[in-house]
Image (cartoon, rainbow, N blue to C red; front, side, top):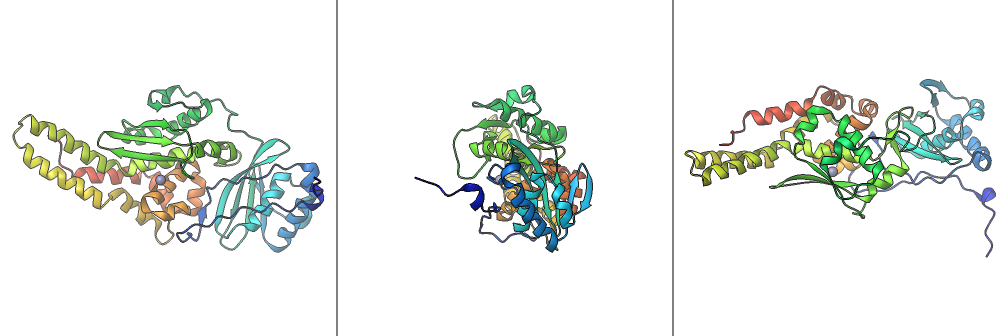
Length: 356
Ligand SMILES: [Zn+2]
């Protein structure tokens, strides 16, 4: 069987564009991973130079190299590296108001590029040096006591990095959490936060491993594994669940006191039952978070599915790509930066009856 000659018929690679049910926010961070083909300078450069020059003729395009922005003319396209050319083409296919981080494979090297399209359609493309997820070997030691199941070395190292980067104050609110590496696919889900009367845990699925291989997050000159977004997202669920879990914990503790015949236990149980119901109905962390969004809505498409997902996505961006959250949702960024989520948790605890 013969095949058509590849290079001559090579179509430009188009950014995959999925559809999802909830309405898209007007501006958002696209955290989907692209299955981009491998590129080679020799085979693809000319074609993508032409494509990029075509984009530059029609739209404002800025190339940022080592922190230095340069507004491109069609002529200047000739000196751009391959990854920048592919990124400009990708940007021309993206909706306005969207940014994403893409790891392009060029001549067997992974090149991180941040792509931003503003609401008017102006394109900014920022590149960094070649990078791969295991470039820095990370010590998984500190996280090991919290791990369950068989964790791949690189994955455990990434989780240790995420756990370190969320900081001590947020870690304290996740007390008792364990991370379970559950092999296999669960649709497109990277992980899940699960809380019940026994405690809470975070499950991590194979989609997170795929994301690790295919993407990065953060500034392209300081890239971090894309899988970090999943860890931050699930930790974010743990944070917003804290007041409810705490009410349940106090209730359960008081049940023991009631069983032991402690005076006043029945009355306290009633008050704590009320507190649990209240937290179930109204989550003060999510309510405070929602105010920061104004009319802008969730910072990602997935976040638009539910308020708790919106919070988890915003928290993931705050930890994984703060500059992106600052650009897209400045008030939300400021709120997290000022520990707004922890203040909301403390506020919820103020009115909560103590355990007996
Ligand atoms: Zn979630």
